[in-house]
Image 1: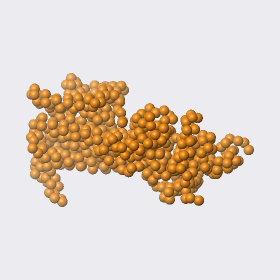
Image 2: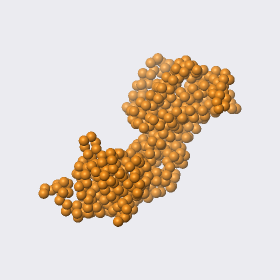
Image 3: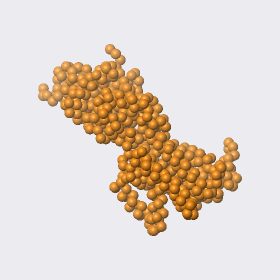
Image 4: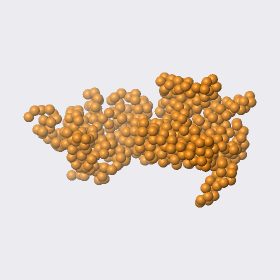
Length: 249
Length: 326
């Protein structure tokens, strides 16, 4: 089997007495969508934050493309190719959609310590950014400030920014949150194609999307992964049904 | 031409016209007033890099303003008395030439800012405000208790420092020097604002998490901005010392830091000509209200309250509308 792109070993994080992450290990393999599901408060977002670098784990190891990235900050991990979208859209509100994406293109090209050339006249920034907006269906809204975009459009913009980084792996935290059924279906189709570019660790509550997309599913309950398997295995797993899908034995 | 650009040109024209008219009607005092406007505007352009673009509310920029002033004072006093400022590794007698003084003022301010920034930029919000204030107060008390350069009484510049080829003792000439430096700083501000660096800096103000998530570490961007910001404010300090031919610890005081912030809020935070509009308004208020009552700052407070409550964009915001980012 191919080397995993991202590999987490025995990750632990406590907030006081609360064990938010209690010995989590998981792999993200090339080309797969690995869904992470679990009830509210299971520690899914805390786990994503630890992988992205926003929260330091108490112990454990995070290996990305063969490198232990545990000591790196958020920005350094992003530069190594961890592209992420946020559960609640996190954008530069005053900047237009285009400029939000341009920031990612700029980062990917290297140094931000360039002081004189105007970015709006720099086609090596505007053209790739525009291409990403076209891919995510936002091209017609390129010049609208992020603050004035609709909720769904902001989710699309998050995706465009993540794409513009050209990541080696995606961490997507509830990309479907707050999207209507129509938007969810479109995004499901989009993510289905995206896995060919880079594997996706997908936190999602929309079970239709998870069952349609995931190659593997891990179930997180109270900071522990209680099961990992294919869609069929997880659907059949008795413990999962009890803990998460809400069925009585 | 956009409305904001027209207003900017108008302000630049007004500031230039005032001392010319004053010269024509033989009222040199107004030249001093306009020079003060230009210098305070320059100091605030410096602060606008950190505060306006980066959202870094530095409550310690008087430190850099005062350092610039003291560099001018110390350099010229050594040059005047022909005593060495230092004698190792070579003997250095200061300088009474503005270009050398400006360079030194900017360098020293930038170095101090690099140190202060490296520590204070690890914090945010109220803590950042308090740490910058604390550093500035340390430098303030240091200046007060340093008798070699006048301590509490300050330091006089006997003859205004020179500039190659012109007579800086002529008020209009000195105004023009300050005015040209102000325009240069504004040009730099406009360039940096629209550059990649400016994009990262402004994105960090709007959403730090987003900036880091695209792979740009906010700390280094902010430290660079803080340093550039300090260098420009330091340059303005050197000019103010030459305008007053005097520098004292009051230039380093927290009231001065507050004044610089007030200037920017009055004019329009983050706007190119916000500091210019703010400095013109401030000096005008100081002059007009100060002539009417000793308690003019009470009325300035009322005006500031009005701006904060009803005109968040300051004067430029009221006249030119909301800022647009490409």
